[in-house]
Amino acid sequence: MLVPLPYYLGLSGVLFAIGVAGVLLRRNPLVIFMSIELMLNAANLAFVGFARSFNALDGQVIVFFVMTVAAAEVVVGLAIIVANFRARATVDVDEIRGLRG
Amino acid sequence: MALIFFGAVALVSIATAVGVIAARNSVHSALLLVVNLFTLALLYLTMEAEFIAAVQVLIYAGGIMVLFLFVITLLDPARESGLALGRPGPREVVGLGLAGLLGAVLLVGAFAGRALATARPDPVPAAIAQVAGNTQQIGLFLYSRYLFPFEVTSILLLVAMVGAVVLARRRPEPTRPAARPALTTPSNGRAAELPESDVVAAERR
Image 1 (spheres, rainbow over the protein chains, first blue to last red):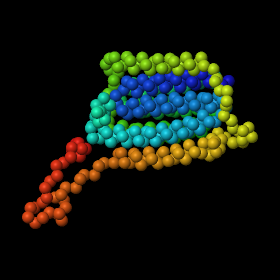
Image 2 (image 1 turned 45 degrees about the horizontal axis):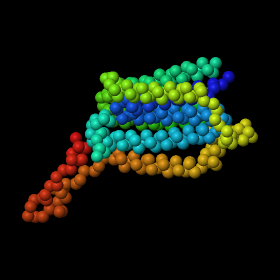
Image 3 (image 1 turned 90 degrees about the vertical axis):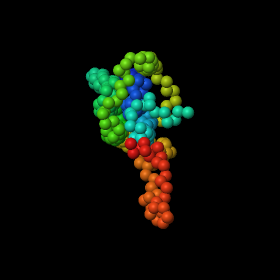
Image 4 (image 1 turned 180 degrees about the horizontal axis):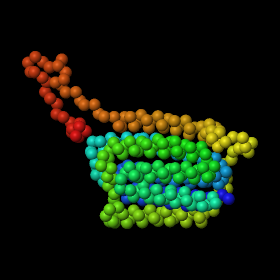
C-alpha cells in the first residue's frame, strides 16, 4: 500500500515552516543559511511527491535543478559570509550595517 | 506497513529539523541537518525516485553540508551561535507565531486540497518506462525537454564558482613605497608613506 500524497505534502509543509522559524529567530548567519536549505529541501519533497502522484518525471527533473541552484547559492552565500565576517569578527546578523543608508 | 515506515522517518525528519534551528552549537545544527537530509533521501526512495535520492546524498549531504562545516569551523571558533531563543521577547513570539501559522495552513491544505491537475505533462512513454530505470528516464528528460535549463544551469554554476573565488579572496596588501627602492630619490631616503586604509587595517586585525 502506498503512502498517499497528502502525507508527503504535510511533512513538506511542516519542514518548510520549521525552516521559516529558523530564519526568523536565529541570529547566526550560518544557521539562517541552514534553515534556508531546510526550506529548499521541503520544496523538493513536495516536488517529488507530486511527480510520484501524477506519474510524471518532470517533478524529479525540477528537483535536480533545484539542487544544482541550491549548491550554487550556498557557494556564493558562504563566500559572502566569509568575506563579510572575516573583516568584522562577529557572527551576528544584527550587527551588519554595511548597506544601511 | 508503508505508513508506519513513513511515520517513523517523518518523525526523525521533524525532530532533526527542530534540532537544526534550536541547537546552541552551530556544528550540532549542521550535523542534524545532515541527518535530516538522509531522512529525506529515504523518503525519495519510498517514492521510487532513486536518482534523486542518490543525488541528495551525494550533493546535499556530501557536498553542501561539508562546505557548511568548513565555513563554520573557519568563522565560529567558539561555536557559540547566538541563540535568539534565550530571551522570549516580542521577536520570538511573532516569529514562532508566523511560522506556526504557516505550518498549520500548509498542513491543513495538504490534507484538504484535491488533485488539481487537469492538464498533465506527458509521462514517460510506457515502452521506455519498462526497460529504463529512473536514472535513464531522467536523463531522457534532461537532454530533450529540459535541455535549455540544463545548459543555463551549467553557466550558473560557472558564474557561482567565479563569484565565490572573487568574493573570498584576500585583498593583497598595497605595496609600500619603501619597498620599491628604485623610486626613491637620492635626496630623501624614501618616499612619503601613504596612510594605511582602514579596510586593510580591519582585515589585518
